Figure (cartoon, rainbow, N blue to C red):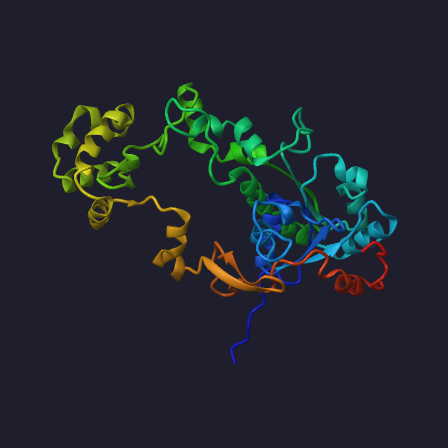
Length: 394
Protein backbone atom coordinates (compact mmCIF):
# COMPACT_ATOMS: atom_id res chain seq x y z
CA UNK A 1 0.00 0.00 0.00
CA UNK A 2 1.30 3.45 -0.92
CA UNK A 3 2.15 5.48 2.17
CA UNK A 4 0.19 8.72 2.47
CA UNK A 5 2.57 11.64 2.81
CA UNK A 6 2.05 14.25 5.49
CA UNK A 7 0.71 17.60 4.38
CA UNK A 8 3.43 20.29 4.28
CA UNK A 9 2.30 22.12 7.44
CA UNK A 10 1.25 19.06 9.44
CA UNK A 11 2.53 19.40 13.00
CA UNK A 12 2.37 23.20 12.91
CA UNK A 13 -0.19 24.87 15.16
CA UNK A 14 -1.84 28.16 14.22
CA UNK A 15 -4.01 30.25 16.52
CA UNK A 16 -6.70 32.08 14.56
CA UNK A 17 -7.59 35.08 16.74
CA UNK A 18 -9.23 36.88 13.84
CA UNK A 19 -12.67 37.55 12.43
CA UNK A 20 -14.53 38.23 9.18
CA UNK A 21 -12.28 37.82 6.11
CA UNK A 22 -8.55 38.67 5.90
CA UNK A 23 -7.38 36.77 9.00
CA UNK A 24 -9.71 33.78 8.61
CA UNK A 25 -8.74 33.47 4.93
CA UNK A 26 -5.04 33.44 5.83
CA UNK A 27 -5.65 30.80 8.50
CA UNK A 28 -7.77 28.66 6.15
CA UNK A 29 -4.95 28.63 3.60
CA UNK A 30 -2.57 27.44 6.32
CA UNK A 31 -5.13 24.84 7.45
CA UNK A 32 -5.52 23.58 3.88
CA UNK A 33 -1.77 22.93 3.87
CA UNK A 34 -2.12 20.77 6.96
CA UNK A 35 -1.70 23.14 9.91
CA UNK A 36 -3.70 22.52 13.08
CA UNK A 37 -5.66 25.78 13.11
CA UNK A 38 -7.48 26.55 16.35
CA UNK A 39 -10.04 29.32 15.98
CA UNK A 40 -10.26 31.30 19.22
CA UNK A 41 -13.75 32.82 19.47
CA UNK A 42 -15.66 34.97 21.96
CA UNK A 43 -18.13 32.82 23.96
CA UNK A 44 -21.71 32.84 22.73
CA UNK A 45 -20.93 35.17 19.84
CA UNK A 46 -18.02 33.84 17.83
CA UNK A 47 -16.66 35.22 14.61
CA UNK A 48 -18.86 38.09 13.33
CA UNK A 49 -19.17 36.30 9.99
CA UNK A 50 -21.22 33.53 11.63
CA UNK A 51 -24.14 35.99 11.64
CA UNK A 52 -23.23 37.84 8.44
CA UNK A 53 -24.94 37.82 5.03
CA UNK A 54 -28.66 38.12 4.47
CA UNK A 55 -29.48 34.44 4.27
CA UNK A 56 -29.10 31.21 6.21
CA UNK A 57 -29.41 27.54 5.45
CA UNK A 58 -30.25 25.27 8.41
CA UNK A 59 -27.79 26.35 11.09
CA UNK A 60 -27.12 29.65 12.82
CA UNK A 61 -23.93 30.10 10.82
CA UNK A 62 -23.81 31.86 7.47
CA UNK A 63 -22.46 30.41 4.22
CA UNK A 64 -19.92 33.25 4.38
CA UNK A 65 -18.50 31.72 7.54
CA UNK A 66 -18.38 28.30 5.91
CA UNK A 67 -16.39 29.73 3.00
CA UNK A 68 -13.54 30.95 5.21
CA UNK A 69 -13.24 28.42 8.01
CA UNK A 70 -12.88 24.85 6.77
CA UNK A 71 -10.18 22.60 8.24
CA UNK A 72 -10.25 24.44 11.61
CA UNK A 73 -11.20 23.64 15.20
CA UNK A 74 -13.08 26.13 17.40
CA UNK A 75 -12.58 26.95 21.05
CA UNK A 76 -14.57 29.56 22.98
CA UNK A 77 -12.31 31.73 25.15
CA UNK A 78 -13.22 34.94 26.98
CA UNK A 79 -9.93 36.80 26.73
CA UNK A 80 -11.18 39.34 29.27
CA UNK A 81 -11.45 36.70 32.01
CA UNK A 82 -8.63 35.37 34.17
CA UNK A 83 -9.39 31.72 33.39
CA UNK A 84 -9.74 32.44 29.68
CA UNK A 85 -6.42 34.25 29.57
CA UNK A 86 -4.71 31.38 31.39
CA UNK A 87 -5.99 28.87 28.85
CA UNK A 88 -4.98 31.16 26.01
CA UNK A 89 -1.43 31.53 27.34
CA UNK A 90 -1.14 27.74 27.55
CA UNK A 91 -2.31 27.54 23.95
CA UNK A 92 0.34 30.08 22.95
CA UNK A 93 3.04 27.84 24.42
CA UNK A 94 2.01 25.12 21.95
CA UNK A 95 1.64 27.38 18.90
CA UNK A 96 3.97 28.21 16.03
CA UNK A 97 1.92 30.98 14.41
CA UNK A 98 -0.78 33.41 15.58
CA UNK A 99 -2.98 35.57 13.34
CA UNK A 100 -5.01 38.49 14.70
CA UNK A 101 -6.84 41.34 12.98
CA UNK A 102 -7.86 43.71 15.74
CA UNK A 103 -7.46 47.45 15.49
CA UNK A 104 -3.96 48.42 16.68
CA UNK A 105 -3.91 48.72 20.47
CA UNK A 106 -6.69 46.22 21.19
CA UNK A 107 -4.37 43.24 21.74
CA UNK A 108 -2.30 45.29 24.18
CA UNK A 109 -5.40 46.02 26.25
CA UNK A 110 -6.33 42.34 26.15
CA UNK A 111 -2.77 41.39 27.21
CA UNK A 112 -2.25 39.25 24.11
CA UNK A 113 0.01 41.55 22.06
CA UNK A 114 3.31 40.38 20.57
CA UNK A 115 5.65 41.65 23.34
CA UNK A 116 3.67 39.71 25.97
CA UNK A 117 3.31 36.53 23.94
CA UNK A 118 6.93 36.63 22.77
CA UNK A 119 8.00 36.19 26.40
CA UNK A 120 5.75 33.14 26.68
CA UNK A 121 6.90 31.65 23.35
CA UNK A 122 10.02 33.28 21.81
CA UNK A 123 9.63 31.28 18.58
CA UNK A 124 6.07 32.45 17.96
CA UNK A 125 5.42 34.06 14.57
CA UNK A 126 2.73 36.66 15.26
CA UNK A 127 0.86 38.35 12.40
CA UNK A 128 -1.32 41.44 12.80
CA UNK A 129 -3.66 42.31 9.92
CA UNK A 130 -5.32 45.72 10.12
CA UNK A 131 -6.79 48.36 7.88
CA UNK A 132 -3.75 50.63 7.77
CA UNK A 133 -0.95 48.92 9.71
CA UNK A 134 0.38 49.25 13.23
CA UNK A 135 1.90 52.73 12.76
CA UNK A 136 1.25 55.91 10.83
CA UNK A 137 -1.39 58.65 11.10
CA UNK A 138 -4.16 56.39 9.73
CA UNK A 139 -3.39 53.39 11.93
CA UNK A 140 -6.33 53.97 14.30
CA UNK A 141 -8.90 54.30 11.54
CA UNK A 142 -11.34 51.42 11.17
CA UNK A 143 -10.38 49.46 8.10
CA UNK A 144 -12.65 47.62 5.68
CA UNK A 145 -12.09 46.44 2.14
CA UNK A 146 -14.11 49.32 0.65
CA UNK A 147 -12.20 51.92 2.68
CA UNK A 148 -8.83 50.43 1.73
CA UNK A 149 -9.77 50.31 -1.95
CA UNK A 150 -10.84 53.94 -1.81
CA UNK A 151 -7.89 55.34 0.13
CA UNK A 152 -5.28 53.33 -1.77
CA UNK A 153 -6.41 54.74 -5.12
CA UNK A 154 -7.98 51.54 -6.47
CA UNK A 155 -11.50 53.04 -6.67
CA UNK A 156 -10.19 56.03 -8.59
CA UNK A 157 -8.93 53.77 -11.37
CA UNK A 158 -11.85 51.31 -11.50
CA UNK A 159 -15.01 51.67 -13.55
CA UNK A 160 -15.90 53.27 -16.85
CA UNK A 161 -14.48 56.46 -18.31
CA UNK A 162 -16.33 59.46 -16.91
CA UNK A 163 -18.27 57.37 -14.40
CA UNK A 164 -18.37 57.47 -10.61
CA UNK A 165 -16.15 55.40 -8.33
CA UNK A 166 -16.56 51.64 -8.71
CA UNK A 167 -15.41 49.08 -6.18
CA UNK A 168 -13.65 46.00 -7.47
CA UNK A 169 -16.35 43.32 -7.23
CA UNK A 170 -14.02 40.92 -5.40
CA UNK A 171 -12.67 41.93 -1.98
CA UNK A 172 -9.10 42.32 -3.18
CA UNK A 173 -7.85 44.35 -0.19
CA UNK A 174 -9.24 41.91 2.38
CA UNK A 175 -8.35 38.69 0.59
CA UNK A 176 -5.07 40.15 -0.66
CA UNK A 177 -4.07 41.07 2.88
CA UNK A 178 -4.79 37.48 3.90
CA UNK A 179 -2.51 36.26 1.11
CA UNK A 180 0.22 38.74 2.06
CA UNK A 181 0.01 37.63 5.69
CA UNK A 182 0.28 33.98 4.60
CA UNK A 183 3.41 34.77 2.61
CA UNK A 184 4.82 36.72 5.57
CA UNK A 185 4.18 34.14 8.27
CA UNK A 186 5.51 31.24 6.21
CA UNK A 187 8.68 33.18 5.46
CA UNK A 188 9.07 34.16 9.11
CA UNK A 189 8.38 30.60 10.27
CA UNK A 190 11.10 29.22 7.99
CA UNK A 191 13.41 31.90 9.36
CA UNK A 192 12.55 30.94 12.93
CA UNK A 193 13.70 27.37 12.27
CA UNK A 194 17.17 28.77 11.63
CA UNK A 195 17.29 31.54 14.25
CA UNK A 196 15.14 30.05 17.00
CA UNK A 197 13.25 33.35 17.17
CA UNK A 198 9.85 34.38 15.91
CA UNK A 199 8.86 37.88 14.85
CA UNK A 200 5.91 40.23 14.36
CA UNK A 201 4.35 40.51 10.90
CA UNK A 202 2.52 43.79 10.21
CA UNK A 203 0.11 43.47 7.23
CA UNK A 204 -2.54 45.94 6.14
CA UNK A 205 -5.41 46.18 3.68
CA UNK A 206 -4.24 49.64 2.54
CA UNK A 207 -0.70 48.57 1.69
CA UNK A 208 -1.94 45.39 0.05
CA UNK A 209 -4.28 47.28 -2.28
CA UNK A 210 -1.58 49.82 -3.07
CA UNK A 211 1.06 47.14 -3.70
CA UNK A 212 -1.24 45.41 -6.19
CA UNK A 213 -1.69 48.64 -8.19
CA UNK A 214 1.36 47.88 -10.34
CA UNK A 215 0.37 49.28 -13.74
CA UNK A 216 -1.43 52.28 -12.24
CA UNK A 217 1.55 53.45 -10.19
CA UNK A 218 3.85 52.75 -13.15
CA UNK A 219 1.74 55.12 -15.26
CA UNK A 220 1.81 57.77 -12.56
CA UNK A 221 5.57 57.67 -12.12
CA UNK A 222 6.34 57.18 -15.81
CA UNK A 223 4.12 59.91 -17.23
CA UNK A 224 3.13 62.14 -14.33
CA UNK A 225 -0.52 61.50 -15.22
CA UNK A 226 -2.93 60.37 -12.52
CA UNK A 227 -4.48 57.07 -13.71
CA UNK A 228 -8.16 57.27 -14.64
CA UNK A 229 -10.79 54.54 -15.04
CA UNK A 230 -10.54 52.60 -18.28
CA UNK A 231 -13.34 50.06 -17.98
CA UNK A 232 -11.96 46.65 -18.94
CA UNK A 233 -9.03 48.09 -20.93
CA UNK A 234 -5.38 47.67 -19.99
CA UNK A 235 -2.95 50.51 -19.35
CA UNK A 236 -0.02 48.76 -21.01
CA UNK A 237 -1.45 47.15 -24.15
CA UNK A 238 -4.18 47.48 -26.78
CA UNK A 239 -6.40 45.87 -27.86
CA UNK A 240 -6.78 44.16 -24.49
CA UNK A 241 -10.33 44.48 -23.16
CA UNK A 242 -13.98 43.47 -23.48
CA UNK A 243 -15.53 44.12 -26.88
CA UNK A 244 -19.10 43.81 -28.10
CA UNK A 245 -20.17 41.11 -30.53
CA UNK A 246 -23.59 40.54 -32.11
CA UNK A 247 -25.08 38.88 -29.02
CA UNK A 248 -22.78 39.58 -26.10
CA UNK A 249 -19.45 40.91 -24.90
CA UNK A 250 -16.26 38.87 -25.00
CA UNK A 251 -12.63 39.61 -24.10
CA UNK A 252 -9.52 39.47 -26.21
CA UNK A 253 -5.87 40.24 -25.62
CA UNK A 254 -3.76 41.04 -28.68
CA UNK A 255 -1.15 42.36 -26.28
CA UNK A 256 1.94 42.43 -28.49
CA UNK A 257 2.92 43.14 -32.08
CA UNK A 258 2.84 39.49 -33.16
CA UNK A 259 -0.68 38.99 -31.81
CA UNK A 260 -1.83 42.28 -33.29
CA UNK A 261 -0.64 41.16 -36.71
CA UNK A 262 -2.43 37.81 -36.28
CA UNK A 263 -5.62 39.66 -35.32
CA UNK A 264 -5.50 41.87 -38.40
CA UNK A 265 -4.93 38.84 -40.62
CA UNK A 266 -7.64 36.61 -39.11
CA UNK A 267 -10.17 39.48 -39.33
CA UNK A 268 -9.15 40.00 -42.98
CA UNK A 269 -8.19 43.61 -42.26
CA UNK A 270 -4.42 43.61 -43.01
CA UNK A 271 -4.48 47.35 -43.67
CA UNK A 272 -5.06 47.99 -39.96
CA UNK A 273 -1.59 46.63 -39.22
CA UNK A 274 0.01 49.37 -41.33
CA UNK A 275 -2.34 52.14 -40.23
CA UNK A 276 -0.18 54.86 -38.57
CA UNK A 277 -2.77 55.17 -35.78
CA UNK A 278 -2.20 51.53 -34.83
CA UNK A 279 1.36 50.96 -36.02
CA UNK A 280 2.72 50.00 -32.60
CA UNK A 281 1.52 49.57 -29.03
CA UNK A 282 2.04 53.22 -27.95
CA UNK A 283 0.03 54.33 -31.00
CA UNK A 284 -2.73 51.82 -30.28
CA UNK A 285 -2.93 52.94 -26.66
CA UNK A 286 -3.16 56.58 -27.74
CA UNK A 287 -5.91 55.76 -30.24
CA UNK A 288 -7.52 52.94 -28.29
CA UNK A 289 -11.10 54.22 -28.50
CA UNK A 290 -10.86 54.61 -32.28
CA UNK A 291 -9.26 51.17 -32.53
CA UNK A 292 -12.04 49.48 -30.55
CA UNK A 293 -14.71 51.18 -32.64
CA UNK A 294 -13.04 49.82 -35.79
CA UNK A 295 -12.85 46.31 -34.35
CA UNK A 296 -16.41 46.30 -33.02
CA UNK A 297 -17.75 47.12 -36.48
CA UNK A 298 -16.41 43.69 -37.40
CA UNK A 299 -17.31 41.88 -34.18
CA UNK A 300 -20.93 43.08 -34.26
CA UNK A 301 -21.52 40.96 -37.37
CA UNK A 302 -21.21 37.58 -35.59
CA UNK A 303 -21.91 36.07 -32.14
CA UNK A 304 -19.24 36.16 -29.46
CA UNK A 305 -18.69 32.37 -29.58
CA UNK A 306 -17.76 32.62 -33.28
CA UNK A 307 -15.06 35.22 -32.61
CA UNK A 308 -13.70 33.44 -29.53
CA UNK A 309 -13.25 30.20 -31.49
CA UNK A 310 -11.72 32.03 -34.43
CA UNK A 311 -9.23 33.99 -32.33
CA UNK A 312 -8.22 30.97 -30.27
CA UNK A 313 -7.62 29.01 -33.47
CA UNK A 314 -4.74 31.37 -34.35
CA UNK A 315 -3.39 31.69 -30.81
CA UNK A 316 -4.97 35.00 -29.80
CA UNK A 317 -6.15 34.95 -26.14
CA UNK A 318 -9.93 35.35 -25.97
CA UNK A 319 -12.82 34.21 -23.80
CA UNK A 320 -16.43 34.80 -22.76
CA UNK A 321 -17.49 37.09 -19.91
CA UNK A 322 -18.83 34.38 -17.60
CA UNK A 323 -20.97 34.96 -14.56
CA UNK A 324 -20.05 32.92 -11.47
CA UNK A 325 -22.55 30.15 -12.23
CA UNK A 326 -21.11 29.73 -15.71
CA UNK A 327 -17.55 29.79 -14.37
CA UNK A 328 -18.20 27.18 -11.69
CA UNK A 329 -20.18 24.90 -14.02
CA UNK A 330 -17.66 25.11 -16.85
CA UNK A 331 -16.00 21.87 -17.90
CA UNK A 332 -12.66 23.33 -16.89
CA UNK A 333 -13.68 24.29 -13.35
CA UNK A 334 -15.33 20.90 -12.91
CA UNK A 335 -12.20 19.03 -14.01
CA UNK A 336 -10.05 21.28 -11.79
CA UNK A 337 -12.37 20.46 -8.86
CA UNK A 338 -13.19 24.08 -8.04
CA UNK A 339 -16.43 23.05 -6.33
CA UNK A 340 -16.12 20.59 -3.47
CA UNK A 341 -18.64 19.12 -1.05
CA UNK A 342 -18.14 18.34 2.62
CA UNK A 343 -20.25 17.00 5.46
CA UNK A 344 -21.42 19.51 8.07
CA UNK A 345 -22.89 18.35 11.41
CA UNK A 346 -26.01 20.52 10.99
CA UNK A 347 -26.27 21.38 7.31
CA UNK A 348 -25.49 17.96 5.86
CA UNK A 349 -23.68 18.45 2.56
CA UNK A 350 -22.30 21.92 1.96
CA UNK A 351 -20.31 23.30 -0.95
CA UNK A 352 -16.87 24.82 -0.73
CA UNK A 353 -14.65 26.48 -3.31
CA UNK A 354 -11.86 24.18 -4.43
CA UNK A 355 -8.21 24.54 -3.49
CA UNK A 356 -6.68 27.29 -5.67
CA UNK A 357 -3.33 25.51 -5.88
CA UNK A 358 -2.67 21.84 -6.47
CA UNK A 359 0.23 20.07 -4.74
CA UNK A 360 1.30 16.94 -6.61
CA UNK A 361 2.96 15.10 -3.73
CA UNK A 362 0.71 16.18 -0.85
CA UNK A 363 -2.73 17.09 -2.20
CA UNK A 364 -4.81 19.24 0.13
CA UNK A 365 -7.68 17.54 1.92
CA UNK A 366 -11.06 18.53 3.30
CA UNK A 367 -10.18 17.27 6.78
CA UNK A 368 -12.69 19.24 8.86
CA UNK A 369 -15.90 21.12 8.05
CA UNK A 370 -16.27 24.71 9.30
CA UNK A 371 -16.60 24.26 13.09
CA UNK A 372 -19.64 25.00 15.17
CA UNK A 373 -18.98 27.69 17.76
CA UNK A 374 -16.87 26.13 20.52
CA UNK A 375 -17.24 22.67 19.01
CA UNK A 376 -13.75 21.62 20.08
CA UNK A 377 -13.50 23.49 23.38
CA UNK A 378 -13.49 20.40 25.61
CA UNK A 379 -11.16 18.54 23.25
CA UNK A 380 -8.59 21.35 23.22
CA UNK A 381 -8.85 21.94 26.98
CA UNK A 382 -8.09 18.24 27.51
CA UNK A 383 -5.04 18.50 25.23
CA UNK A 384 -3.77 21.35 27.41
CA UNK A 385 -4.45 19.45 30.65
CA UNK A 386 -7.50 21.43 31.79
CA UNK A 387 -10.77 19.92 32.96
CA UNK A 388 -13.74 20.30 30.64
CA UNK A 389 -15.40 22.63 33.16
CA UNK A 390 -12.40 24.88 33.66
CA UNK A 391 -13.97 27.66 31.58
CA UNK A 392 -17.16 27.95 33.59
CA UNK A 393 -18.66 30.57 31.28
CA UNK A 394 -18.81 28.19 28.30
